[in-house]
Image (cartoon, rainbow, N blue to C red; front, side, top):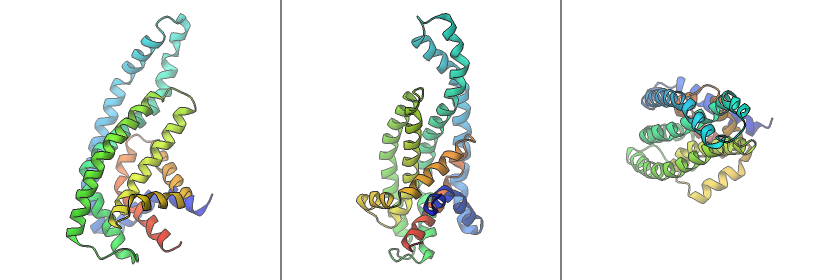
Length: 244
C-alpha cells in the first residue's frame, strides 16, 4: 500500500483526531455534526421504509411475464439492492446537509489551513471567510444539481453487475473531491489547479474514496464523519504542499 493511498484512506480519522485536540475546531464542527445526524436518521429511515415497495415495483414491471420461479428472486434482489439504495440515499442526504453546513465547513478548512504555515495561505480573516462561504454556497448549489443527476444514474445502474461497482467508486471519488473543495476554495485554487492537484495525487484521491466507501458499511456514518473529513482533507493539502 503506497503512503499516499494510506494517507487518503485514513484522512477523516486524522481529521477527527485533530478536532478532538482542538476545542475551537470541535465546537465549530458540532453544528454540522448535529445536522448530519438528523439528516442521516431521516434518510435511512425513509429508504428502509420504502425499499420493499420499490423492489416489488421493479419486479412487477420487469418480471410480469416471466416464469413463476423467477419471482423468488424478490429476497435476493431486496438484499442485494439494499446496500446500493442506502448508498444513494446517504448520497442525497449528504448533499442536503452539506448545503446547510457550507459556512461551517469553510471555516473548518480555513482555520485548519491558517496555522499550518502554508506558503500559499494568508492569515485567517473573517471577511475572506464570508466571501469563501458565499462562493462555496453558490458552488454547492450548482454541484447539488449535478450530484442529484449522478445519484439518479447510480440508482438506475445499481442492478447491473460490475457497472454498479464502477458507478459507486466514481461517486465516492466525486465526494472526495467535494471535501477537498473547501480547502481549494480557501487557497483560491482555480478549477484547473484543482483538477491538476487530484491528477498529481491520484493514489491519495483513490484512498480518500476508499476511506469514504468503508464508512458506507455503517449507514449514515458518511454524514457523521463529514466535519472531520473536511479537516482531514485540509491536512492532506498541507502535507502535499510540504512535500511529505
